[in-house]
Image 1: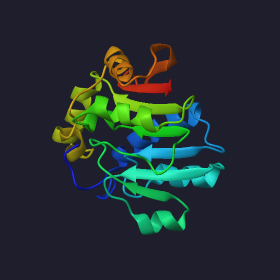
Image 2: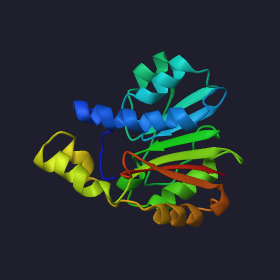
Image 3: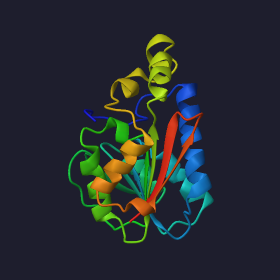
Image 4: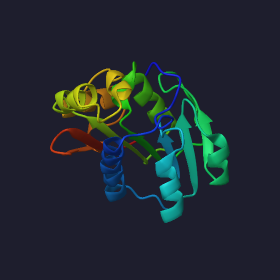
Amino acid sequence: MNRSESFGVSKLSLLDKIIYYLRVHQLKKYCVFNHKIIVDAWCGYNAVFLHYIQMKFTPKKLIAFDIKLDSTLLEKQWISSFEGDLNKDFDLPEQPDLILCTAVLEHLNNPIGFLTNVYRNLKPGWSLVLTIPTIRSKPVLEFLAFRLKLIDAREIRDHKQYYTKNKLREYLQKAWFAEENIHHHYFELYMNNFVLVKK
C-alpha cells in the first residue's frame, strides 16, 4: 500500500459501488455487530460501512482505521478515528471484538506483518473478517480497470498479489491464528475469498 489517500476520496464509479456492496453483503450475512467494539481497517475516507452499522445495529463502539479519514464527519456520527499505515506496527485505541478488513490484504507490502498486528490487538476469542480477491479475479479486474475503465485503475494497479485459500491459511497461521479457527468460502463466482477467523 504505497499511498497517501484513502479509498473513497475520489468519486467511485457505479461498478465500484456494486463490487463494494457485494463485499459488504458478505459481512452482513456472517457477522454480529450488536454490542461489539468494531474496527474497520482501511475503511475508506468516510467509513461508509461503519455509518451503516451505526444506523442499523447497536454496536458498543465503532473505530475507523485508515491512512486518512474525514474525522469531522465521523465524530458527528459517534465514530472514532484512528489514522495509520496498515503496513506498519499499530496499537489500536481499544482492544476490539471484531476487526473488518475488506479488500485490503492484496494492497499490503507486508500482509503477514499486518495480520500479526491484528492478532496482537484483537480480544481473545473474537474475530477478524477478511475479503480478498482470488487469482481468478486478476484478469477480470484488470480488463474492467485498464481496458473498459469501469473501475478505479489506481486501486487495481496497487494490488501486490492475489490469494488462494491455501495462501490465506498459510499467512494467517504465520500470524499465530490457529488452523482450526480459520473458516473460508468463496463468493462472486470464486473471484473473492471470505475468511472468518477467531483468535
